[in-house]
Length: 207
Image (cartoon, rainbow, N blue to C red):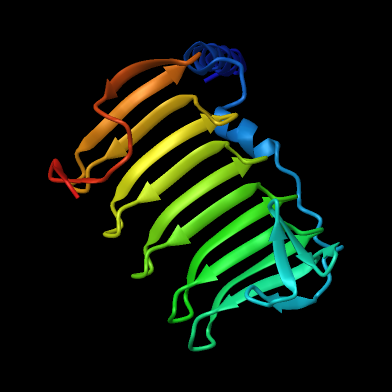
């Protein structure tokens, strides 16, 4: 095949790609580009128990004495095993907060920026299978949001832009049958939507 033929094929392929997908950046790629790395360098290593009498919560801000607390707050199970650990800056969640099952395995990991959900939030069922995997930007859902049943089967996969559904939205019953399958464009839904995702279904029965 000559160079002219190769160039022509490339032009045709590019034209088809533009017609099918448009020139805009994919929604997921757009979402990933808006996040910046969190600066946690100003958080001291001080750690305090969540039930400490010197720690007070006022209007969503933790105070130690009369000053907003900067450091780490942890809680323990009655067996003294670690239940949760989170970093705080000027009294607000900033950085990573983790929770743990009584057996010590990770239950959830969430990221915050100045008290707002920011970045990846994910968690597991007690059997070790993934439970959810969300993305947030300044306390708003952003990008692909996924959740799974305790069996490991997918529950839903939704796409958000600025906390609003945008793009393909999918959900399944635990038996694998589609539950919703629609696309959102400019706030309008196109496709199958049987109900809101406020409960789980197994073999089309309430759980």
